[in-house]
Length: 179
Image (cartoon, rainbow, N blue to C red):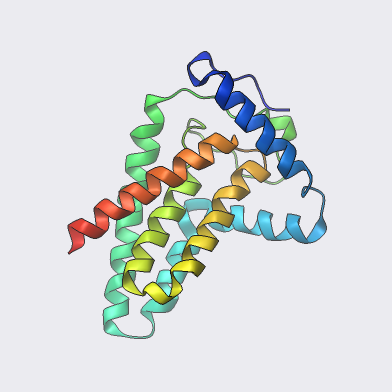
């Protein structure tokens, strides 16, 4: 079970997190799901998956190389804003470490919001603006990376939802600024 919610998140959020945790319990222990989700959470560390995607796409043309550079730069700015800005506004504790999936890197920041989810939806928003045909792939991958944080019990599900909303919002702002 997760650690008790700080009072400022309230009972509704606690019930949502508990329900999401019970739903994820149905998948936990499935070898295929565990392998996919654990890989997604590790690839989400430091936005590695998004830097790799941008770099691979960057090999195809000079324009895509510029997009890859811009994506990596903006992911750095997003990470700084979320991890050193937004997360410092909240002192939410993470779920109890003894329940985490073994081998998960221990984050140093507040649990709220999920930086993995924020970066994932930020990257998906930027990548989708470059080629809309792949938007379902980018957002689907973002959802898996984000959900992996609740699955591995490093985050509460509400941290992931908030991170996804924040990343999407920051991505839309960045897209508008780049026009």
